[in-house]
Each structure stands twice: as C-alpha cells, then as structure tokens.
Image (cartoon, rainbow, N blue to C red):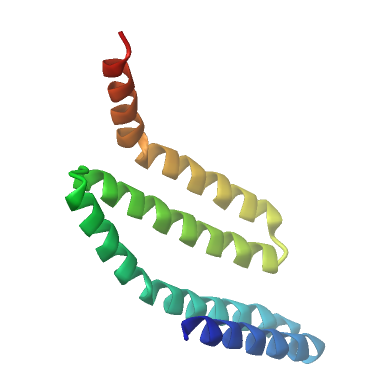
Length: 128
C-alpha cells in the first residue's frame, strides 16, 4: 500500500530531522525537502488512474475536454503551491509562504476564468 510507504517515509524523515537538529540544524531543511519530494512523487504516481477515470466520465457526460484540462491544471497548481508553502513555513519564512499562497490562488482564479464564464453564460441562458 502506498499510504504505508508515504507514512514510513514521513516518520523516518521526522526522526532524522529531530536527530539532525541537535548536531547540524542546517541539514534538517534539506531532509524535509527531500522527504517531501519523495512523498510527492509517490502521491503523483497515483494520479494517472484518477486522470483516466475523469477523462472517461467527461467523455460519457459530453463535458468539454478543455474544462477537464483546466481542472487538472488547477489541482496541480494547488498541490505544488501547498508543497512550496509548507517548505517555506518549515524553514521559518511564513512571509514568503503567504506570498506563494496568494500567487497560487491568483493563478488558479485566472486559469478558471473559462469555466466561470461558461457557467455564467449557462445561467444567463436559463434565466428569462
């Protein structure tokens, strides 16, 4: 099971970080980043099945494939932004973390404009 691997990597990294902070605290951040990248890689390996399922559902429901692409981009941006924010917070840079978070949200809103526009057009067609 992938979740056991992810938990194992996380807990192992935590133990290494706790020990390293006593002797070489500057290396603790590197271990955190490496562990985070490994966990992210394990998590992203599971995404292909979800993407294929979403494509199949969107084809059956006759949903515009452009919208599915937008939703997947938004999800990717949210995951990567959260990863970067966590790294910044772990290193004590909450100010940079907040700016990355805001930047990610702005990009998500910008990318989602075609979906919002289509939704509003549909609503306007339904209303008398």
